[in-house]
Image (cartoon, rainbow, N blue to C red; front, side, top):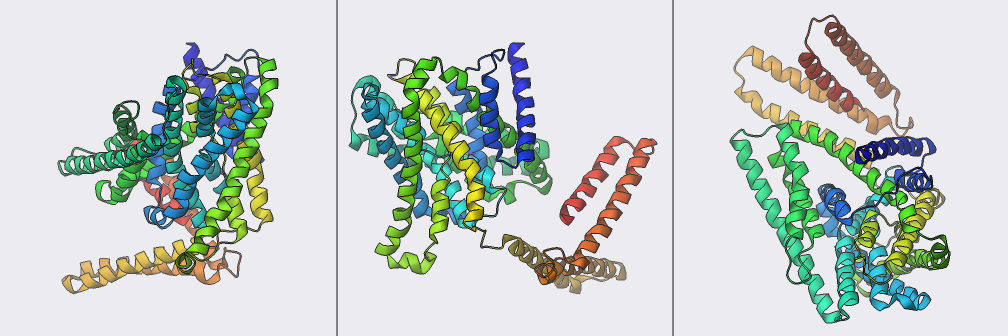
Length: 530
């Protein structure tokens, strides 16, 4: 009963803090972490002890799968160099820097424990930065680099983390062995992800041909997939290490996403959008809220916290400075050495590089890795406390300052994606008209010819409607009079339709299933307007 009450309380807190974040116009991860920490200070609130397995196996797989699904593979490949420099090079550099500083400030921590701490706090959380950037237009390339970094850096950090644990408990460590193991772990994880993705696509195609799937079963399978892939990959071990379950899950998400147009029908995709949006929101809310609730667990003794706080502050500042120090040479040095990069990509403005460097908030993976340390691990409590300090500092300091920073630096998306979206919609509609024209010669009856003419007229109207946005949007602040009037009239008509079917439902003239199907169509029509 206590567990069910706690779960209900956490879900209610997620909704409450999300509403507060929206009211205060702050990124929701910050509201969750700060709110969780505030709740943890109340003496009547039960102490929440997180199982690392619970985080890794329940929360992490769908977040990884969703991240892979939403990844633009073309853009990812185009930005493979900066992503690799951040997700591999920067993670290693941060780990080493944190290990040196932590060992210098707390010699009792030991080198292996210091390296474990470095690996734990080295990977930024792309979710936290994404929550900020969804409120502000950003250049597509910066978003692509941050998303790509978030997909790969966890695997790099967790490999170093595992070797640090082995070294601390066994007293042996080899850089050559660790380097080779990283390559094998990453390559095998990607290979397993591709294998599982291929099997999934083949299975779904076969089930669809046999007419054994519908939109509900499609989405049930998609929800099971990240857990199945993560658990299956995580169960494979060769000695102390195995393939990266993180990279396997991400790879499946990317692979299936690229094949989604072949294996899912439109209804399945519409349902999936709603299901996954709510799931990811709740999981992210739960993850960041639980970070804040760990405050009481982490701070067992106020005297211990007083002694360790300076190490937490030092490491928090260090991870920020190392990232800022890394992004500039990583951006400009390759362009100095290889002129072809400048010809292909140009030279980014220093302001955009700074934003990339300032977007290194830590999150749920760091907390889970710290909690997963064996209880006998040397300096475990100290590592837990410092990790919490880093997560809290980077989320609150960098998260709250990002939007003012973007405004101060006059950062914009530079891509005019809204205009590009309209142009793509017009091109698609023109392709539809061209196909109808091709079919014109096969029409033999007046009735069919009239249907074709009506469809072409609808397509041409939609093109004219969208063209109004392109032609007049800039002159009228993005809301030309004709387009605004068109939207208003169509909205009024849709609302009249909705009121009529609602009246018929209320009087019992139609059953609920008919009402819901018509409401669904009206909602789609309304979504097309917006």
